[in-house]
Image 1 (cartoon, rainbow, N blue to C red):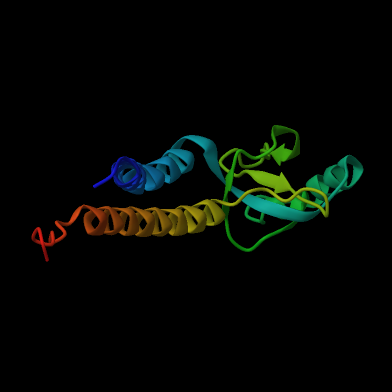
Image 2: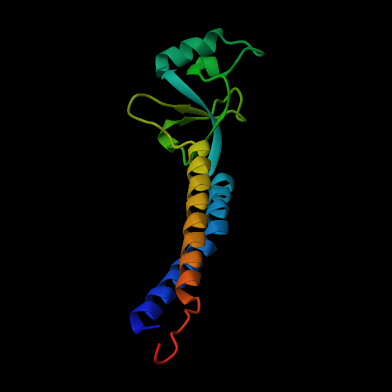
Length: 150
């Protein structure tokens, strides 16, 4: 095997090893983002201004939905990565609730997007590792040498 072949085989092994090491790392990064950087929120599509919030608060009675005071919330909670603190509302009527104002200019990164991206990056890295290892094995196989004089 010539110098070029050895370098190419070594490069294939290195790339394959790096891709193989990244396969378990990508889901771990997604889990870290979920645990440390994400928050469950209700998105408010039409957030009310301060005057309307005060008016809604004066009509609100305990037992009614709190999020309706601040605008039109989504039906279910959505996990968002690093929500903008300036757009986050924690109602004083229910501090366990977190609302996030959104409009046509602000689209928060949802955790389901991160999970989808992590899944396909993991699959792609596994495929690259497999292809590199197979190519390196094919390049290093023993080739029959023609006998002298043949």
